[in-house]
Amino acid sequence: MKGITTKNKKSIKNICIFIFWVLIWQITHVIIGRDIYVPSPFNVFLSLRQLVLQPYFWRSITFSIYRVLSGLAWSILLGITIGIISAMNEHVHDIINPLIIVIKSTPVISFIILAVIWLSSSNVPIFICFLLCFPIIWTNVVTGIRNVDIKLLEMAKMYGIKRLTVIRKIYLPSIIPYVSAACLTAVGLGWKASVAAEVLSLPRNGIGSYVHSAKVYLDTNELFAWTSVVIILSVVFEIMLNKLIKKSTSNGFCTVNNSYKRDDYSEATSKESA
Image (tube, rainbow, N blue to C red; front, side, top):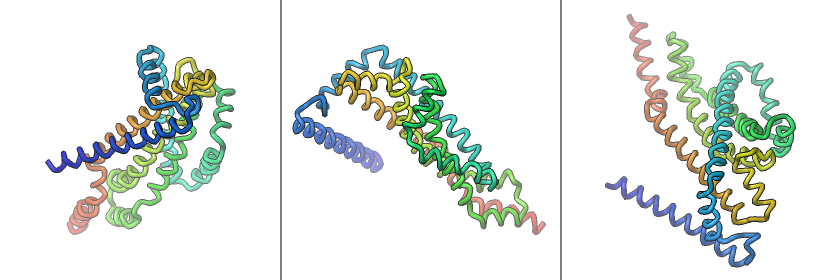
C-alpha cells in the first residue's frame, strides 16, 4: 500500500510540474502577444489534434521511428563491437580515437550537408543518427571495460577460471551500466539528430519534412505541434528502454559481479584443495 501511495505522489508531482511549465508557456504567450513568435498551448493542442486525424501524420511518424531505430541499432551494434576490440587492443584504440574526436568536434550541420550530397534523402537521417550516437556507445564501452576490477581479473587468473566465466561474471556486469547509460543518452540524441537531418534532406515521409514545411509557411502552431510529437516520442522511447534495461538487469546481471567473489572463489579453492 505504501508503494502505491509513493507512486501516486510521484505521478501527482509530475503532473504539477507539467502544469507549471504549461502556465509559464501561456504567460509567455500573453506577454509577447503574437502567435507567430510564441503560440498559445491551446492553439498548439488544436493543431496537434488536427494532425492526428491526418493519414500522413502516422505515416511520417512510422518512417521517422524506423530511421531512428535503424540509426540506433547500427550505432549500438558497431559501438559495442568496435568498443570491445578497442578496449582490448591499444593499437585499435589509437586508430579509432581520432575519428571519435573528429565526429564529436565537427558541427552536426556539416555532416548533414555532406550526407545530403552522398546519400539518398531517406538514408541521411539514419546515417546522421548513427554518426552522432556511435561515439557515445563506443566511449562508454571502452570506459566500462577499462574500469573492470583488476583484483577480480587477477583472482580469476590465479585460480584458472575459464575465460567464458570471466567474461560473463566480470566483464558483462561492468559494461552493462555504461552501455545502458549510453543507450539512454543516445535515444534522445538520436531523435534530435534524425529529425534535424530530415529537415534538411526532406525525405518524402518524415517528421522533419513537415517541420520544414511549417517553417516555410510560418505556421508556428504546427511547428510547435510537430516539435511536441518529437518530444513525446523521445520520452516514450527512453521510458521503454529504461524499463527494458531494468527488467534485464533484474534477471541477475547486476548481482552477478557481487556474487562472483564468493561463488567462484569457493569453487576454485575447493578444486585447488582437492
